[in-house]
Length: 462
Image (cartoon, rainbow, N blue to C red):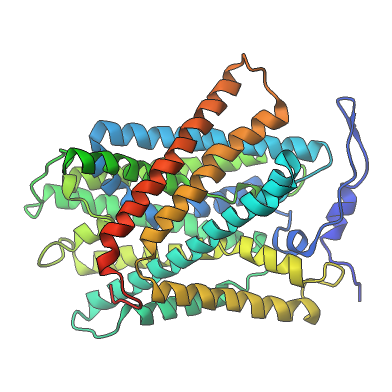
């Protein structure tokens, strides 16, 4: 039996020192277990597109009609389009920095590696690493909560007088996640994420069709597109809506997704982003426009709640069941994708890269630690069914810096564009405006937590 993991062959294949544009590239470092086992570099640009789509397009997009109620037609659509453009540019710039580093023989596989090498060791260890871990693990908790709520919704549709409580459904969803969490690497999720891509198109099509049907039926509510509330509430609502839209477009794991690409990576990430943003334009805009058109300023936090009506469902039960099953299955894929940074950290600290990936030495700690992380996330989701409010605060502090600010800084520091160039000032403007949004978004999130605090109760059956 060999004692060297198979992926080390890929390292040796690219380990030779080469010259490019007159620069001598450094030989690659030996990979640690986290990079070697979890972030296997074996994928194609199409696989990358699947991963990107699952990391960005999820059931959170069902909140977009509500975001439009806070901004109105013009402001909402402009903000939605602008956020899409900015994130596409941001993710592409991040990819170009990673490609440049690979060309120099220093391929960076993690967000914290980029921060360490470009901004300094403290940035990776004390800023970017904790931020990314908090956002990704928070997303796992939020997805587990959402999965439990979807299961409960399906249960109540089929058994309206049922007595089961939310924490029981969260536990069931956690059991499914416990199994999926044992998938050995990010690359091994490629088929799951292809199904996830199809599912997000399916539930978005269902929501769009349902909204159009209700809008044309005699059950349609009286539509009013004015922004409700006092001047103070409207102002806070604007920033709340911007935070919702920014979080909807957020990923936070772009370097880890690019790490799954087989070398050379040049140009592959751009193709993957094109696949992802094709799905984003199709789903985000169709759900946002149809939902806001059908319900106006009565659109709720998730448009599925509007489908239930005041007294009875506005759509056939079979249609609501189908939509929620699609949503439930897709959110399980999103949950596993956001477990990967946690899995990578565990693998790096507790696995042995000199032993085969599936040796007893590596499988036992992997099984224990991944199971433990899922159990903890499920417990938090059951205890804190109001976690969405907390996640909004984490999103303001984490998603905006990781996806809107740091990519611009990384590009300017790495490529040093002239201060008279357009790209320098566009990047600086985006980073500056985003930095302001972090503060304002955090204030708006804290305000919402205070307003909702009276409804908070551990293990509440919401």
